[in-house]
Image 1 (cartoon, rainbow, N blue to C red):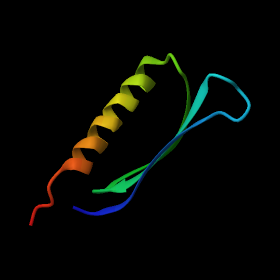
Image 2 (cartoon, one colour):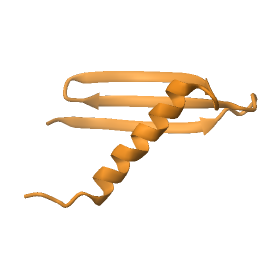
Image 3 (tube, one colour):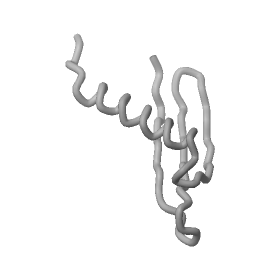
Length: 67
């Protein structure tokens, strides 16, 4: 497995209330994604992404180190 960069950042839009800016940078296992998107707080795809990324982060944070 080759992981160069995985970065997920979500922040509030600096001008428009209720809008979130998602910065996604992935360079891993031959996949290269560099994307910035904007989502309302009520956007279902955005809500699911946040739920999924939190779940994955918790799994990794509490996983035992193998080896």
